[in-house]
Length: 304
Image 1 (cartoon, rainbow, N blue to C red):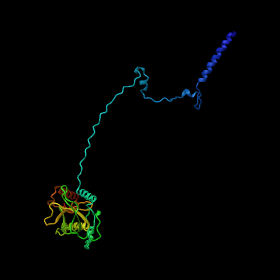
Image 2: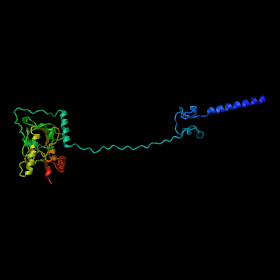
Image 3: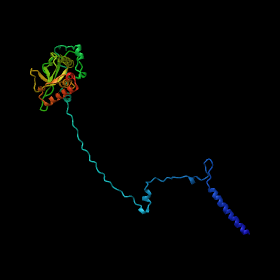
Image 4: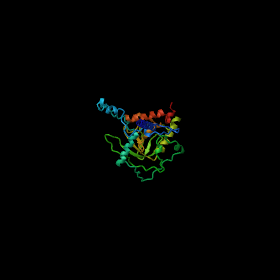
């Protein structure tokens, strides 16, 4: 009997112990959301294990794959053919650009200077332009870069200054002179000689045609305004003179602007083809005249 009670007591203690352990592991939630469970029972820990590619376990932990790395596929890159560098069409120098290059090169070499002419005798003053001449200047003729001289014109000297010795590559000579005035028939009187612009026919201010007379007066006034008392640079060529014996020249300003081409391109003159022996020079003048006609510049605005 005594042994039976001890056995029953021992069994009861075991049951109580088991029941107590079961109660201790039960998760109880409070109305406010907290619980009595250990945090490790419901939380997830990611640990510090580094991230591996998705196929890492397959290649490195799969015995059927014999723990071998995946095969490496070598792809030979196909070279892209390089396009050859093509140098595009290079536009040749315009007459103005070439003139500027020549003058700049000669200036650097010391063969071209802007020295003032000798003045042994007082010079005759430059004719003062009238009000109509001041307002009728050559529009688009580059007058904005030329300042009208307020001092008398320099005294003429005997000979022209030769700026370059002709060679096989450049047979023309570059001269310089000071402009005194321009006559009504377009002759430029300088301190050296009389010049006529090559291949340029100006409208006649003495014409019986009222339209040509008006344009002739306007062009003559503008040319006097921007040329009188200023220095020009000019070249001669073949034919050397016109039918009246006047020297034919292609004139430039100090900045290299071609005055012959500028008059044509502004619509203030027409070309005289027979005065150009050079086909390249003639084509340049024809192009300038075509541009003036298409743009209706100068007197071309009156041509239907």
